[in-house]
Image (cartoon, rainbow, N blue to C red; front, side, top):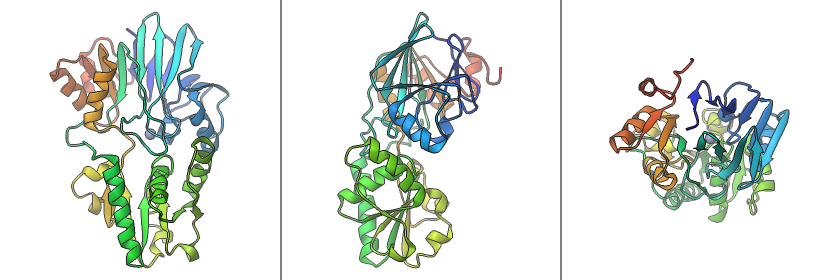
Length: 330
Ligand SMILES: [Zn+2]
């Protein structure tokens, strides 16, 4: 089996390859363009969409191997294939075949189809390294159509009461999902500058990304304003005297989310897999071994072992029980 350890990113020593490392490395796979997955690396393997988005965010890598989904690259004695992860546009899983075996690394992913991301695909592998952000049973997301329909009802109610609906979602991925839903409902989207910048790149990558207005304080009335969560308490939002603010995040499933985020409403729109999707994905890939990371990695691995699946957290102490994995920091 392919050996793996975690030290600020997954490391595969046989190829000296890092998967989503947080600090610069000589050879890395970047699964998608969210800032906690990108870096200024030497040689990088990434998808076409991620290459475009990363250029805008942090500039190009020194040497990029840019792959279309499904294409295969032979490098350092291994076969690299990228598969869509369904998380944000361009988000990729890495399927590796080496003389030591096969491996599928999900990066961030979800099974539910999105309005602006590619639909996930999968391939069987001996080792599955997966993100487990929502790896506890209470995190099962309602169908996306239902969540978006609730969001649109919230917007219509605000507009009917001469208030501006302000929807908070991450600039890359979440905001474009919201934009597509708002435009499809016949409402008028207006975007914060940071969201507009990413959406312009999406426009080159995604057929049919809707038109939108750029934020202008004097013209905000009658629009649905889409902003990154960071502007929640800013003067830009505070100066809208009649407003209703909603946070769109998977963590909206937690009790008290409205109070935690200090908003009028919270909707569980997530670009990650819920607990049920994590389990379903393991069935689809049918690996011999599962290695977990992010969120409830340890709890989810323990849950899998109780189900008779060999599973270990890459980032938590239970890896010490597993002889094939080096300790964190080792
Ligand atoms: Zn992400």
